[in-house]
Image (cartoon, rainbow, N blue to C red; front, top):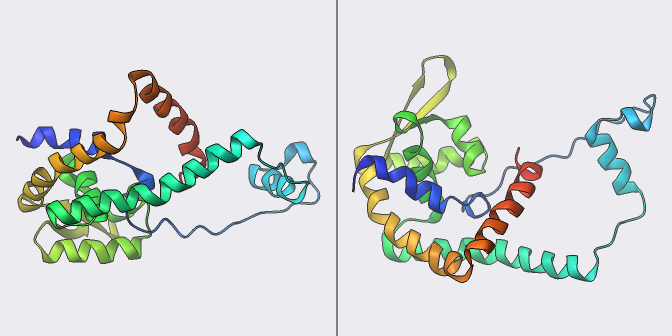
Length: 202
């Protein structure tokens, strides 16, 4: 297994919804401006107005789809985490951090960028990276262009751990998702998730 093959593991198995770390703590911020006309309102203002209006209840097909999606979002991370813990001895959150770094130039990334991609706060990421650092899989150094920033880098040992864990993880992803879908359905899944992701991406 060569180093250049590793990003394929990340691209084939990356799942922001199943990152394993807690999602960003998002605070709702609605900037009301009473002196602006409705057509000039910012997106957050319009969203607040829509929420205050009569609810647009889900139709039966929408409710069925929503219930399936919420169950998937709850059950899939658990399944991925269980497989990696059982076979590789690491949680999915750690795998996602290692895979993300393996796909970055020089296997390195600013901690703030890394937290954004894996979907967690910098403080929670720092705790996870500290554990990976103790194992010798990641090292950190000061950012040369940002005195308050840090750069996380994947070590050779971390690269080896990722290479060993990736085959079992990819097999699990295939068994849970892609072996159950046709080529057309995979294309549809990609198209659907591509439409939804921008709305939930910080």
